[in-house]
Every structure is written in structure tokens, then in C-alpha cells.
Length: 270
Image 1 (tube, one colour):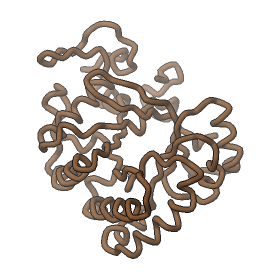
Image 2 (cartoon, helix red, strand yellow; image 1 turned 120 degrees about the horizontal axis):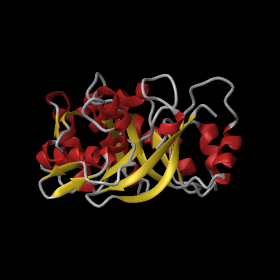
Image 3 (tube, rainbow, N blue to C red; image 1 turned 90 degrees about the vertical axis):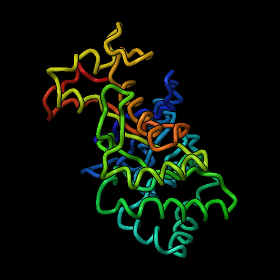
Image 4 (tube, rainbow, N blue to C red; image 1 turned 30 degrees about the vertical axis):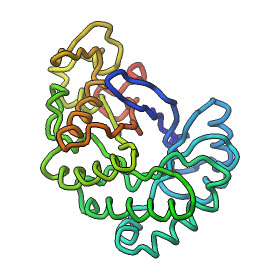
């Protein structure tokens, strides 16, 4: 099943708490198994959560009554209309969310995946606001957020110096303000692999693989024995610098490639 990629959904804090492990269920590939077969496979493996990148009706139908919580994504081609046309957002919610909302557990709706910074970044907040208004008006509580990569950070190390880049902060500061006001989390894709692959001379492999037992990095009063925690805290530091220290972070993707890249081996799987 090449379209199923391992992820973690993690509510992160200085003392990391894992709330559940799930998968990203993507739809790009050849000879993909039918959605019902995929969902049965996930259930057989006791997968606790799933994230889908768009409202594929066959997948949503297969998820009905599965007891698997779902993060639902949006199509990029819908983003501008979702942000600028409240009627379009209303129809989107009524057609893509409400018919399934009583039969499965939408934990979040993610407006886009790693769109900030980029040509669609200016539409993300407006789309979030319009979708949130319509979902609330329909009587449901489904947090609306977006998913970012850590490339939005200009500074990662040490973690307390974490800060958004100039290109990203203009979008993420108001988004963080919206999330804080609603008590919604920010979703983030956190890949220690890319940090290690780009700077292997300075980063110990066991530190990147979460296999180290001793303290590697000391940052003020905080001590880190793995790169994952340090990267997440860098994002928290960036949120604090834009005045939103109470926005929680949900890690939507992480992992280690098994082939096709430097340092990509099955023995390195997290």
C-alpha cells in the first residue's frame, strides 16, 4: 500500500504527550486498493487516527462507522473560492462535511498542506474563517486549522531561538491569532530526517532517530536528547514570538524514508 504513509498525531508540549498514532492516507499512486479494503486494513492494525488530504467521497463512505477519527483536508483548487466566496464555503461544508459528520469523527479540518509561504498562502486564513463559520452555524464543533512544514521557520536552533521567516510570518501571525481565539491547534509536519540529511556533519544520527539516551542539546533550563522534541519546541518558540504561546501543536506527519534519498534505509525507520 504505497499510498499509506506513517504519521504521528502528537499534542506536543515541553513534556511531550502522544495522543495517538495514525496514518496519512494519500490517493496518488497506481493500483491502489479500494478504500473499504484500506480502512479494514487500518482497523486490523489498530490504527487510531487517519488523515486524508481531500474529501474523497469513497474514502469518507468507507470511514463511516469505523470509529477511526479523521483529519479532513481541502483541495488546493478550492482554496481561493473558500476564502473569497462565503456561499462556496457554505456549499462545501454542506456537501463535503455535514453528510458524514454524524457517522464519523472529524477531529480537524486542515485548510491546505504546507501552503505557507507560497502563492496560495494569502487565502488560507480566509478559507479557515469561512469554513469555521459555516461549521459552527451547522451546529458542529470541528476545529479548522492548517498544516505547515517547519520550513516556515527562519531559525530552528537552539529551540528557544525558533522564529518564523519574513515570508511566512505575515500569514502565520494572524492565523495563530485566529487559532488562539478559537482554542484550535496548529498542525505541523516535523521531519528530523530532512534536518539531519541537510546537516549530518553537525547532528548525531541517534539524536535524529530518537535513539539517544543522553542529553545532546542544552538550551537554558531545557535539555534535549532527540531532534524531534527540539524541532517541535522551535515551533512553539516561534508561536510565542508572534504573541501566541498557548496555541497547541499537533504533529500531522513525521517519519524516515526507506529508499530514494541519502541516509534512507529501513534500519533507520523511526
